[in-house]
Length: 145
Image (cartoon, rainbow, N blue to C red):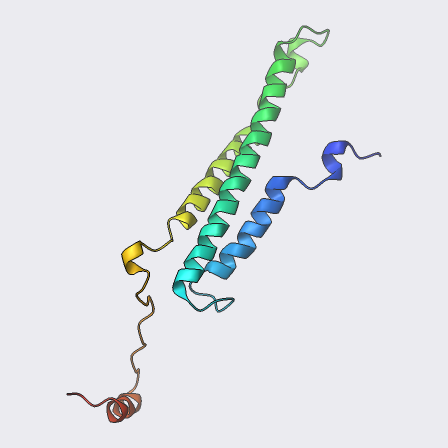
């Protein structure tokens, strides 16, 4: 079986989605990968969100292009009986839903960029001691005034 030109290359929406996942994981505040600065991590998460939005747009374009082709072939004059022609199937609707959810997730990641007035503040507060011994040690090093 000779692969068609559509199968020979990796679709761009898959590559964008893959790199969006990698960049978003690095930009998550709960991971220790990459920078420790919360502002930098937020910017990395926004870059991952942009990649997800681009992936969703590419998916939407590919699915819509195929739907246009199916519609054109359905209404074209041909010798194929009308009950044997392609119609919209569940795969098209799943593709449109996947593209919409990918763009929604990317836009939510883009909203994680901090506001200008909060950029100088630390997002992580110092953890409180959990036991009495740690509390006593904390009071010895940081006495109350």
